Image (cartoon, rainbow, N blue to C red):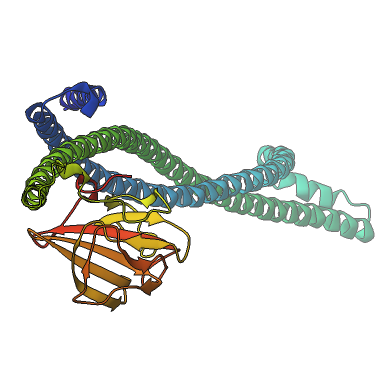
Length: 457
C-alpha cells in the first residue's frame, strides 16, 4: 500500500507541475487541457480512495488500540489486586516471623526452667544417693549384726534413764530415716512431675514452632507464587503496552500519510480547478470572440444597409458624397469620452456587489451636459424606470435600437423623430446610479450588443 500511495503522490506532483507550466499562455489545445483535467480528476479519485482506505485502517487501528488499552487497564487492575494480596501475605509472613520469634523466646525461657529443674533434680538425686548410701550402711550393719546390736545397745544402758535415752536414739534414727526416705520420694516425684510438665510444655512449644514454620513456609511459598504471577503480569502488561505503542506509531504514520494524501488531493483539486478555470476562460474567450465577431458581422450588415439607404437618397438628390457605414453613428456624449464601466461582465456590481453582465458602456460626465442621438430615428420610449431612471429609446430601423439612461432631464417625447446629433436629454444620476453618467446601450433584434460596433470615442 505504501508504494501505491507514493506512486499516487508522485503522479499528483507530476500533474501539478505539468498543469502549472501549461496555462492558457502555453498554447495548449483545448483537447490537451481537457485531458489534463481528466487526468487530475482520476488522480483525485485515486487519492480519495487511498484516503478512504487509510481512514478505514485508522478506524480499525483505533478500535484495536482502544481494546489494547482496555486490556492494559484490566491487567493493571488485576496487578493492583495481586500487589494488595502480596501486601497481605507480607503482613502474614511478618506475623509468622514474629510468632516464631515469640516461640523461640518462650522456648529459651522454658529451656532455662527445664535446666533449673534438672539442676534441682540432680541435687535431689544427689541427696537421695547420699541417704541411700547411709541407709545401705545402716541396713547392712543391721543385716550383719541383726537386732542384737540394737538390743546390746539397750542392754548396755547404765540405768533406766540411759536406757530411755538409748531407746529414743534408736527410734530417732528410724524416724529420721523414714522422714528422709519420704522427703526423698516426694522430691523425686515432684522433680519428675515438674520435668514431665516442662517436657510437655516444651513439646507444645515445639509443636507451635512446627506450626509457625509451616505457616511461614506456606506464606513464603504463596508469596513466591504471587511474585511469579506478578512478574508474568508485568511482562504481559509490558508486551501489551508495546503493542499499544505499535498501534499508536501506525496511527501516527497513517495520520501523516493521510495528511500527505490530503495535501496531494488538495493540490490536485486546486490545479484541476485552475485547469477548469483556464478551460472555462478559454471557452469563454472563444465564445466571447465568436459572439463579438457575430455582433460585429451583424453590425456591419446593418450599417451597410443603412449606409446603402442613405447613399441611394443622396444619389437621388444628386449628391456625389460617398456614405461610410463606420461614420453613421456619432458619440452620444460630446462633453466626455471617459469610460467608467465598460461593456461586458462586471465581477462586483457597484450597487449590488455581485457578478453581473453590463449591457452597455458608462460614460462619466458633468451633471446637466448634453446627450445627443447617436443616429436618426424614432423615439419609441421616453420616461422613468426604477433602475434606468430617466431614459430615451430610439428606433433606427433594421431592428437596431439605442437606449440612453440615468438622464436628469428628457428633451424629447415618445413618437418624436430625431436627427443624428440632436439633443435628446441631459446627463444625470437617476435610477440605480452612483453618480452622474450616461449609460448607453445598443440592441439588435431585441438583444443587447456591444456599442463599440457602432460608436467610437
